[in-house]
Amino acid sequence: MPIIVDIDVMLARRKMSVGTLAERVGITPANLAVLKNGRAKAVRFTTLAALCEVLDCQPGDLLRWEPDEPAGDAAHDEH
Image 1 (spheres, helix red, strand yellow):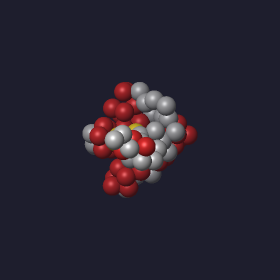
Image 2: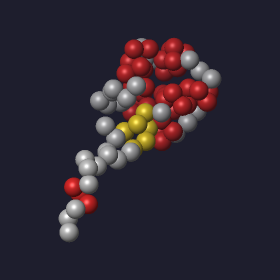
Image 3: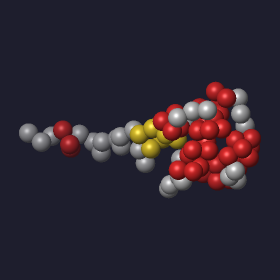
Image 4: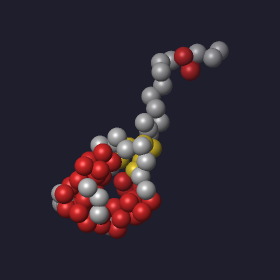
């Protein structure tokens, strides 16, 4: 999936543990791990807002989009 979750980056910048973040946000450490490892299918805006509040950041500091890698050079061979 081309959405990259950078919660680890913000945790490191804030010198905060996953357990502390989960407690302050009000989600389980297991659910935070799913989100932080990029395995979540969705995130509630309320959870995203709580993450931003606790980490003092913007949603774009936690989530970014990267395009999928092309499946070879076939897309460039349209001559």
